[in-house]
Image (cartoon, rainbow, N blue to C red; front, side):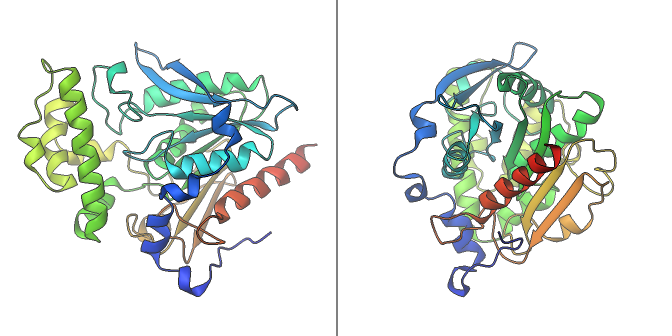
Length: 327
């Protein structure tokens, strides 16, 4: 099995990799994971409720439970979530697809507005979900912003262990949200239009559900992620400005020096959203692994293009290697 992502030359374009990773065509066809999924509302502490979907294998004992965390303005039904979930379900894992607050049509579950500093509720939910593995291994895989949450869970695990957490994988994780936001706003305009449109739709839903608390009419006139951040964060979060807010989930330097669970980052040097320099600043202990590939785009790594996925094979191989070493 290959250790490096080696796509065909005509599929190396980072925008091609990034855009096709989310196209619905990749999630089409029979999906036994989705067919047996059961909806669950997870108590995430402090009266927070998060919606998710559990898919259990019925015939054989599972290899473990995989918790999938989508990216910003994605959901449990995002193509990359369904594709990876199907791949690992067919290879023996139970799958839990969690929606972050205000994602996946869950805006009504909590009056408070989503922001990326809400690590407490996601960590609490991960702890609850890990218990669904019946003492078997629990693996967390996060994508983009979900990768950032996954890495923060790995760090918090050091002080507050999740007993059966064995691995954390982060695909194209956000490390420096300020730089990532600027990359979205100032890079290929398609990404800015995509995220701004989805964020505005989310804010409209929240305002319609809780009109006495939220008023976004002025915010909906803005056309960049940074403008919306500067308007929303001081008004509806505990943070005074975007600098204070972004600092709460920036990951850099030796932040992974105290890990007690294996954490793997899979990223690409040509990611159009996450600057490659962000990855070069990271340092960690023996539990930390950075796999920085030359190609792959943002959450792409499609090979054979467009239906196959290299990081799915990489993750499955790493988990098999670990299982062999522990047996």
